[in-house]
Image (cartoon, rainbow over all chains, first blue to last red; front, side):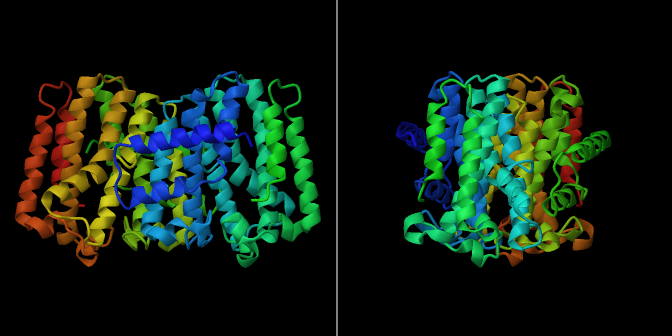
Length: 281
Length: 281
């Protein structure tokens, strides 16, 4: 991953949080706790890369970068709740509801989703695109299917799992990359190519997550492992086994890279795809 | 209340829900259950009145009307959760988490907040205004203070309660009325007057809520009564007693009406203020 985008984002985030005019405890503390816990900042990086490949500078994607990272963090806080995935550990620390209580966690997630739209709602076309990708037609839809998956009621096999991951992970990757590109002035053809790439990238990201959940340790990942088995979730590893899951990730990664054929300035996106495929946390 | 606005909203809402392209059960069912349970539609009515007084037609405020009603409903679903107010009854029926389970209720709220921004994010200046009023600087901020109120940790008296209600209720009234007015083309002077009126209207609405919670019955209200006492909440009734609470509501109502002095076409807003003061449910 390109470090300069992450560094820019950390600076922009710090400035945004410092300047925020109303900071009500304990919900504000929970918001800050969640969004400053590190993380890879994949989505802001995608937003910046989107603006750059569209010919814009990073500044054009700052608000999109903040928005998609806030959306990502609200979804993690709500996903971790006892009534959802019931997770205790995230990025090496207690989850928000463990540290601050459930009521504060619900409100911190709500506050973050509102903050996301405070950031992006001046961005016109990109704002609408992000709202669609983060809602029932996108990420929330994926969480709906995932909730059914947890209760073993909704998963029939690999194609269903592809659909869940496309909505749950790829939709916000699309919001980030194509949202950043739209903010940077991209035309429709570029947006379509970036959407296809981001869809593949999100699927690869999720397959690698499944593999790491089965193979890695809480020390390396900073979050609980073996959760999928514990929650009775169907994953690529449980469906295909480790080797075939890895093969599938590689194949989708190549398809994603192929979607960028003929797009100039795509080098850093191609490198990003490979780095997310080979990530160990 | 002007019935034609409510009727228009019910029609627009039905069309929107019918046309929504992705309907994933059970979360979608919970969304429909929540938003079609009736209710007074105060916020959509305010949005339409805002557009009208700004010289626009109702159509200009349709998306704002949908957005603010979705925001209102998401906040009710999350507020009713066991980790928040723990309410079983809303609009004469089981609350969403009672009918669909907690995980589905969390996601239905999230879906609604995203839907709200799908609706308003094409509205430019109104979208940003609504996002600010619904977030930490507005409604969510009020819920933060209210959560502290529930645990008796944050309320020092009447001025604190005024602050909670201004954020918790008035902010979304402002989003509705001034948001509709902005969408209808209002100038800054009109927006400022409408904000002041809406701030008063929200406070009156909340004081009347406190009075009804102490005085009315679940049969009339369609929601649990005596909840404030049960949850140990400081309310206007517990602070001031019934008579003084009623006097306060009347005085704020007059102040709200006074904020509209010299604004032409304000008659229906003046009537609305009186009807919300004298409401019995």
